[in-house]
Image 1: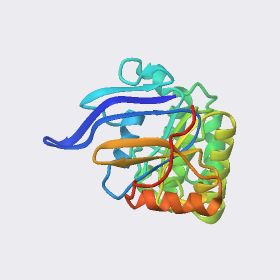
Image 2 (image 1 turned 90 degrees about the horizontal axis):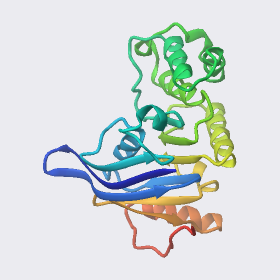
Image 3 (image 1 turned 135 degrees about the vertical axis):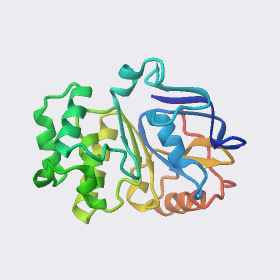
Length: 240
């Protein structure tokens, strides 16, 4: 459902972050891991269409993200680590725009803000919100519609325990419905049991998706090693 082919991308000339990356991800929960600075957030930004690759192609459900923009982005939800929302628009305006883009009733903006605990901040602008409220606003936007491709960068950051449980429940429902969910997080434990596969990034390229052990302890130990950059581990590709 998500495919990146021949991806090359650099923020500065001569210093590629991703270099010839090929990756195809289908339904399920995929954890994207690797040491700090390896390009995890950059890969999500490319998959979400926030950044355009210098070379290569990104497709969402077979649609080119930069040639068939409207159709390719419709099933896509992206929650970045830091807010990319307009700082001067009110939350109500932002959520109503998301409803229009996803073909949802405008009333869904009201209920999504309520689910995020932001009903009393509907007329506030993004710049008037705390870090935790901005995180909840991003999640509220992602909750509009029924996205089939969901990209989450540190989705539990700055959330209280109740909202963390809500996010994990939402992810479980997405996976049960056949969505492709990709998560980048320093907190691996909350996602480990539900993860379908793992992808590691190193030296500008991706390895995986890789199958995870069934036993909980072995699964978490493997994820921890991969997150630290030790990819010389015994694991095989996820069965087709």
